[in-house]
Length: 205
Image (cartoon, rainbow, N blue to C red; front, side, top):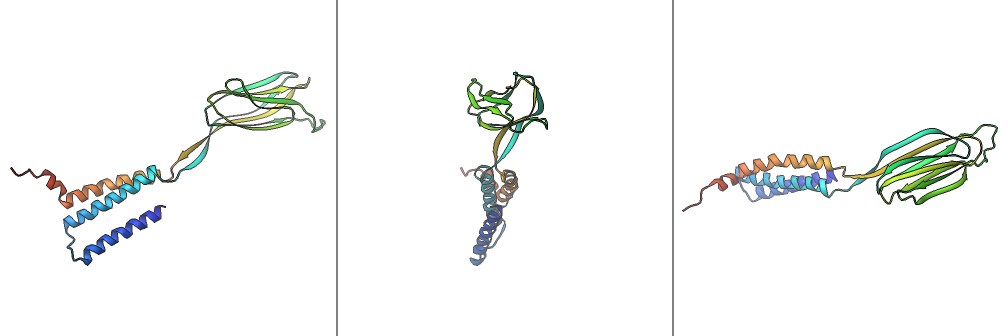
């Protein structure tokens, strides 16, 4: 998009200069000032388009994360609270630590995810591994809970993160630069075109 904009601006500039030469118009200071003002307007409009109308892109930002190995006594539970804003994603995984002599099909824990109003969002019982992804519909404290269903103690690898999708305009920095560049072009065009002198001229009485 940037290359196309630069090419179009260059073509328009060459057309303007070509028309002036073909009509045998002397390119003096005033004519150059008018051309400078035209280019300045083009540069400014390009900068404003880059800042406010150019295509947007998204990226994911991790706002909070938790990763640890959690021991849970027999028939007891563990919970963790996270502050989540509306529109964020609460992503997590739970994996039980197994002893080699235990069968891999052993079912050992249940897990639940609650919203700020204690409504159950995700839940599963008799699990050995869990993955969840919850899109927050409201802001507040969300709770992740794990319950040990065995009489023996267990250990779980718990990983939880709060992710937020943010939008930005990749051409915003270019737009700011073009807007700044247009300022001296405006000054040059106003000075060379004589517009400043005309504004300062006293009215005839």
